[in-house]
Length: 141
Image (tube, rainbow, N blue to C red; front, side, top):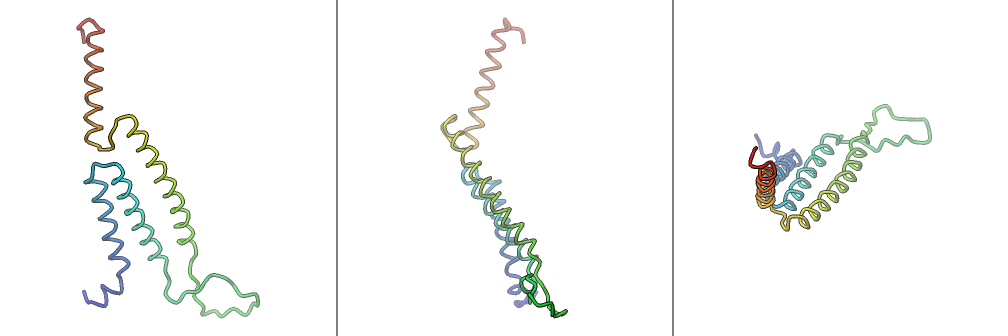
C-alpha cells in the first residue's frame, strides 16, 4: 500500500474507523444512551460509505439542458444514492427520537438506564413472581 492509495481512499478508511467505533460502543457499553450514540455513529459511517460509492469523478448534475444539443461525452452523476441517504437520515432521526423516548420510559419504570441494572431488576421480579406463583399453587410447582 502506498501513501497515495491511502490518501486517495481516505473516505473508505474513515468509514471503517467510524463503523468499528460505533459497533464497539453498541456492544461494549451498558448505558442505553451511549448505545444510541453508537448506533448513530454506525449509521453515519454507512451514509458516508454509500455516498462514497455513488460518487462519480468528473460527473455533473443529471440536469439536461433546454436545448437538445447534448454532448455524448458528458458523464452524469446518479442522484439515487444521495436521495436514498436523505431518506435514511430522516428515518435515522426518527429512530433516534423513538429510542430516546423509550429510554425515558425505561428510566421512569426502572430508575436507571444501565442495561445490567435493568436485567438484575427483571431477574428479581421474575424470581419473585415464580415464588409467589409457587405459594399460590400451595407449594406445588
